[in-house]
Image 1 (cartoon, helix red, strand yellow):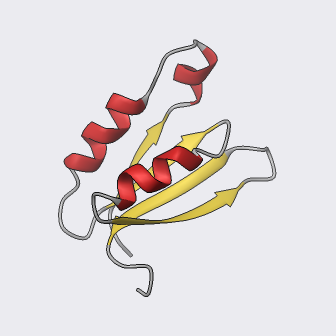
Image 2 (cartoon, one colour):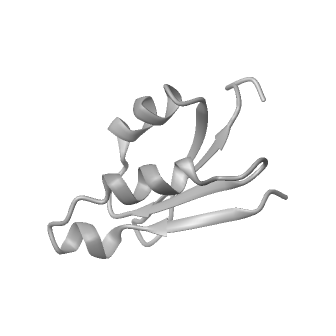
Length: 79
């Protein structure tokens, strides 16, 4: 199992703050084999293409509580 870094942006969103810079910094700081998990109150669809352009693939799940958890890792969709 890969090491994971989690960025929980739910409070940022609730306060009306934009978490994009936090997310991009966390993605840039990932080490080899690490994954980035974003926890959000909505599905961050625009983030998928932004990080795909930087070589990331993603897996998305919605929890029973209605939270979105998106795991990003470097790689190809066929992995």
